[in-house]
Length: 374
View (tube, rainbow, N blue to C red):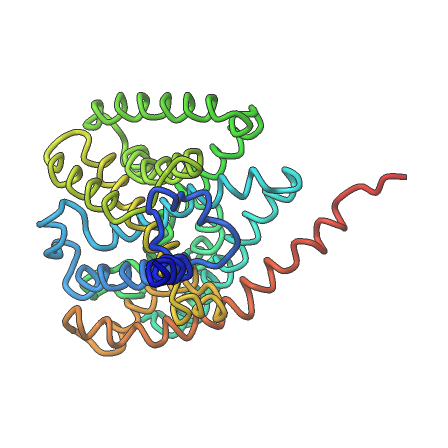
């Protein structure tokens, strides 16, 4: 009897296995103790790896993953970015102190890093790589258009005069085309916030349902869509899935079964109209499962380094083109090996010298632009 009581007491003292039904996304997604920065960094490197094929071989070459899944590695990684962005941007709007603060935070996150990147591409890489005399290169309008038009995000300018003319891929700028769609998604979250949609879950659900019906209607009419609209439809779905994960965060359990079931659903519907939805859903489950459940100290320690994913995303494409210019014809693997180290270096410098300081300045800027109450 005594031994049985001791056994029960010992069992009570041992920590019980966690009930996966209690691991809700809303409970886990608190604070900054997660793997989102690491996932975004790996996604940015995945985009670099994906782009190594067309940049080194030519745009007509298709990477094996696209033949298998219908999506390139780069596209899948961009979908990861948009799923995370949908979740975090909606959370940011709901928690922000003011609309002005929200807009300023988004601008400071995107604009300074992009501006320095474009100046580097146009007036460092361009000057070094062009076949034209430097005076002729600088007297033309193209280098300035690369900065000014690409800062506006439309219409984008991808090439520079005399740069990569004989390369398999002539564009020196490439990845930034997704930024304009991200800004549109930000604007949609902001507009929905102005309408009070995020204040009530029912309204949020109805808004997402309305988006889903609009998405289906536009997708059915896909052949008639211009390229810009087709691109937005493709990227807005993972963003909307991220928003949905935030809206239902308190009811959404995170478990490997959810990852497996949504991945299976995506595989079953791979040839259907609903594949972009099911694939985005699977990416969402997988992303947030890996973001919040593996909590090893060595993984979470990455957050102390910084958020280098944006800089990696911006600098990878130009430096991959520069690798072709510097070393000649090369395999995709060689392009990765040549371009990844300088990309990582510039992304670290971009975070610590440009992006991080810009974001840290938000409070000072807000105090200056906010009218003082007498």
